[in-house]
Length: 110
Image 1 (cartoon, rainbow, N blue to C red):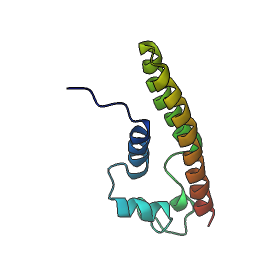
Image 2 (image 1 turned 120 degrees about the horizontal axis):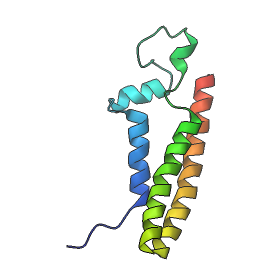
Image 3 (image 1 turned 45 degrees about the vertical axis):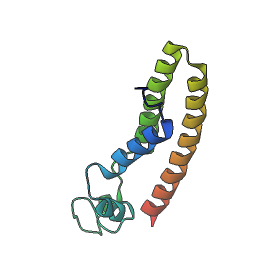
Image 4 (image 1 turned 180 degrees about the horizontal axis):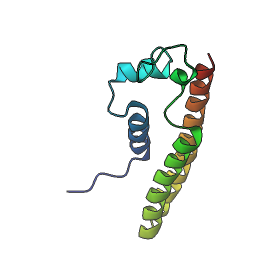
């Protein structure tokens, strides 16, 4: 049986899902992200009720660490194609995350 090829997009989407939902009901998480409810039901008037759980730096550092580990594995195995794929995927996913984080920041300011 041949091993399943490494899918960087699936890896990133899985990491994003874990970062956003944290074993929480997706509807509840989306309401929290949209600022409709807070995670611990604090008063909606309190400034901390609209804050997100992770900073931009933490999220992008986690993305960087995840890709760096995968890139090092590909480098150790000498897989140039995989290294190029990971490099492109990292830059693309970093851009996606930055856009999502900009949206999140805009929602927080509402």
